[in-house]
Length: 401
Image (cartoon, rainbow, N blue to C red; front, side):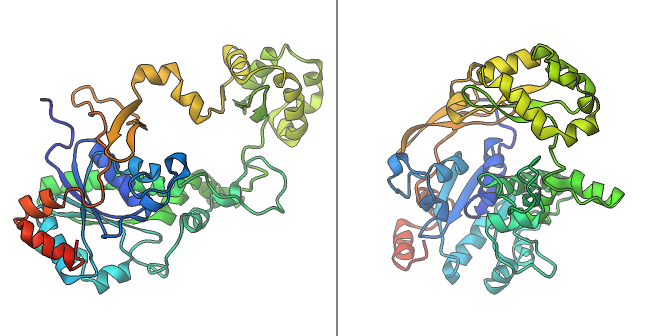
């Protein structure tokens, strides 16, 4: 059997909701053995949904099921000394620990990097918090909305809109959380490589706010260079963007003159485009609202696919805004095998997005379903750590697992 890329790497994940679990998922997709540690009440993502048929079920949250494929699952009450001791036993033979404890909580519960690394010098600890392990805001708690706006991206949305009086908008879904998890996974792989070379692990300090700032890195640089504070009226203010069609919307990207000419050719070179006020990029940005209204006089007679094909054929980037239903039926994604099915004992057979890459030597397996709450207590805490069934029962009765 072909080994997977991170075969043999052991990861313990003590994280909830999205950022930390997404980091763990990225590693498990590469073949690492990831053991998810939940409180006996479970990860809050289990109660977040969405749920099939809108019927809440702790074992049926689509959010939890997606983020925790390919993982093992145990329960530990880390407020309890016995629970923390069991975690210490688990981490002693682990390569990576992913944790989202606030700094004050890790200090209060004696779950610091120094304590864990004393028992396992090769251990890499990836700490993911809203504002990092140091600084004035280290102990601040935050929701995804807070860290997203704390990174500056929300101020720039919706892009290309002239109304600066309205409030900024939130990013879609858990955008900053996923971005933080991705940054954490990349840093973790780098630290793991270093640990294999030097024999020493280290702590990775991931700030969700700083991960969010990476989304606006060009705008930050522009302010440093030119003193220009980007706004939603400046960003994305160009012909195209979100253009309405007969059955939805299409994105057309034409910042350059050659792309503008290609778009006009796809539209049949309409007479209005000969107006000198549309002659250069700066002028087109100034008149973007009326230009887009003109484009929609043409596009609303066509479907999104028709508009995209005609514009692409002339050399201007364009693509429909796909719905999830569109993506699930997309022939290209079917050919690539991007979606795969996994059968969960409670949620049943579901279709999951897989990985956006292909490895020629160590291809990923089909996803295994997310664990039931405490599903692998017997395997991990019992068989591997040497606790008997009787001891596990006593731990359960004491609220430790």
